[in-house]
Amino acid sequence: MNIYLHVEISSRELDSKLLLATLAASRGHRVIVSDLVGIEKGVKNGFLAPGIFHTKSLSAHKVKISRHKRMIDKGFMVTSLDEEGSLNDYGYEGDAKIRFSNQTIEQSAAVFGWGTDDVDTLKKIYPKHSHKIYKTGSPRADLWKPLFSDYWSVPSTVPKKPFLLISCNTGYANNLNSFGKLVKFENEMGRYQSDPKHLEMTMGRHAEDFNKMLAYIEAVKYLSTHNNGYDIVLRPHPAEDIEAWKIILNGIPNVHVIRDGPIEAWVKNAFAVMHNSCTTALEATISKKPVVTYVLPGQKYSPQLANELGYRVKSVEELLNKINTIFDNGIISKKKELAEPLSNVISKKIFFDDELAAVKIIKIWENIANKNLSSSSNIKKFKWFLKYNMFKNTIKKVLKRLLPAKFNSINKNPKFTQLDQQDVSERIKKFEHILGLSKKLECKLLSKKTIYIRSS
Image (cartoon, rainbow, N blue to C red; front, side, top):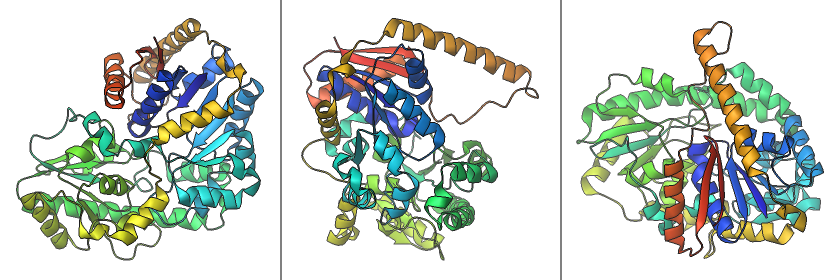
């Protein structure tokens, strides 16, 4: 069977898609992991044979609906697991309405859910499609389990001293796109029509995120001046302009603004995680990493569930005291704050059992697939086509540098960073070792954003 895994934000999704790909390839399937452009062009030009197209959301955008229709007409099946998941807030009804629709679920062969919260809500709002909505959990959450602890290596840019990780989530205030573009995008997705309160939420989040940025700046300066000998790593959200943070925090001692690699590796190597309204708090909690939640007064629109986790502090003085205490005492054990009520809340959001979510998803693919999804793709032609497109893009980049007034400026914050053959191969070998897979796998880099994986 052919499986095409769409990656939007590589730092967030690549490792979990490689886990899926490794397991699927070990079961005899042929897998391509790629950005959307690579998959879409391969399908359009006939290089990629019909297979499972697994994407990151089912929002009701006309472009997405048209894309999926073209694929389905060619014999592909579309499946999805929402990478957002609304993990850091209570409930799922709002996201169920703005990130899904009857039409997009109708187009899909299967919809996978993170846990009870999103699955039950989707089945309630879209009852005629309940038979194709599955509670599997997420391969991203698989990687938070102790089983994969050795998978995460130390990032090459990690500070020499122990560090506090500040997981920043101010993507509304410090977004790569202007407020006007964001409003237009939300309108095109039909989100203001799907949820009458969505505009109010968007405006409220923008206002609160600016206040959050000011609070972070104050906190970073205070911690830098008074801490007990550790560094601070502020990691902006993928949607944020990292250059803005580098300018704002420039010159503050022992402070690093870094967004290299997956967040999981940074969580593992930090002595604690500080956040406000960030999904990383759930990951850190599940990974038994100390979490410090910096609660700001009057927050109404920012997600609330994540802010109930860990040690809650409300001032820079409390923040300093708690983080210094964690650093001095080396607290790594499960905290009293993670008592049964909060554990129940988390378990509704993220489903765990003895079987990996990735395995569940692959089994469902195998169950719904037909023989038409097993035809061979023309990988050689696809590879040369990708190389040709890469050459054209290189020329465009040169022209953008030489003629900035005529061409748009280069995106300094790409969502999908270029891949490296050796790095990808090493990640897959780690998965093979951890999972005890006996079948030898072949991994080829078809382009800087496309990987082909199959059994040898």
